[in-house]
Amino acid sequence: MHMWRIFAGIAVAAGLLVADGVRVASEQAPPVNVPGIGKPVIVVTRQVTGSETWTNGNYYLLRGAVFVRQGATLTIQAGTRVIGEAGSRGTLVVERGGRLNAIGTREQPIVFTSDQPIGFRGRGDWGGLILNGRAPVNLKGGIGTGEGDTGVYGGTDPNDNSGVLRFVRVEFSGVEFSPDNELNGIAFQGVGRGTSVDFVQAHMSRDDAMEWFGGTVDGKHLVPSNAADDAFDWTFGYSGRAQFVAITQRGDDADNGIEADDSEFDNNALPRSNPQLYNFTICGDPDRNEGGESTRAAIFRRGTAFTFRNFLVTGFKTTGLQIETTNTATTAQIDNGTSQLGAGVIWGIPTPLHSSITPYVNSGRFPDVRTNVEPGLSTTACANHDAPNFQPSSAATLAGGQLAPILPPNDGFFEVTTYIGAVAPAPADNWMDGWTAFPQR
Image 1 (cartoon, rainbow, N blue to C red):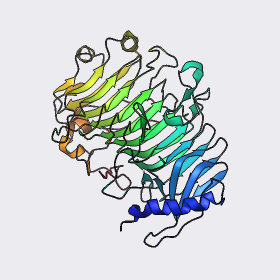
Image 2: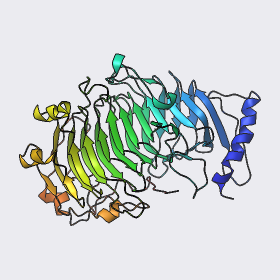
Image 3: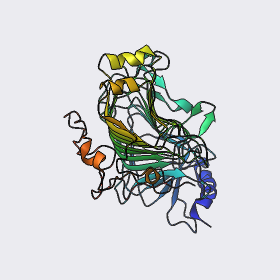
Image 4: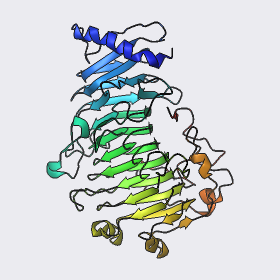
């Protein structure tokens, strides 16, 4: 019997110990040793209230919503596996003022995953990972409430610190509570730029892979993969920075590569969404055999501003980039010079540029955007569900020379590159190697 198949039985046994009144700081059951499983299993319920460390000598099973409370710090050791219990919608939520320090390594990433057996796992098996911070959001009163009762977020501190995510993978999450009330793979809710997010993958989520609800948090080396909704979604005044982002989709269930809003309630709400994005590769699924979704790479709408530069886009069934030109709140950010786009290649898509964006490209307002030329990256390679390859070949003239990248701000976050797209052309090292994984079940 595969070890994941017997997690449910372990959870029941350990739960009896919790019911009998055995408690530790986070209301964990003591470790339970079960024949056939190489490590003890600890069932965690409800809350972390102090300083606590989860080690890679155990498996940790989330029973229901587990909260890292205000003033508490949860540290997760490299190589630790955290399991979301399907039956109880296991979820890990960091409250405002709480911290999660999940610091893996390339050789020993931290993995949040399903309790279902390999071969039977799927999107939405468990809740997901939610971080709440005190950074600004543009909701009424400056405060929001997360979907699925995942806590209050927002505030006035753009430098708020919710901890560290490094070499972390979250997979098969995004449980649905009700229609339009689903958790994401990872939700950054009012998270501040004092938080460190680097080398993080959100894979096979039922809703968005990564969603940014306001806040100022930055992210590098991000892999939103095979989400059933959008891969990279922002709203409510998000103004962080992101660099080196590799997106891939499956056509059985997917929406946009990027879905970008200011606020659905007020398209001119302040602070306005205005993230800075550099070095993205957005790869859709051109295969219609498993479904007709994965149709559009990016839609900028509802008053958002944006900077989107040094990108490669391919594989979507209908459209590459689109702007909501019927919304003057969105187009005003282009006309006044706030929104910027340029230095990108879009190919392998029937309509690489929607008619809403073509005039800006043709006029030079959005410079160096090329369509239907091969930049040395195979659409088939980056759309490979089991082992996507985002690294262009060494002969990638567009990605490595002829189309020069636009220099990012010299602000201590962005790195200057000689290429466009998320990954440097071969034979350079591929930052995705060793810690990402793309299981389908």
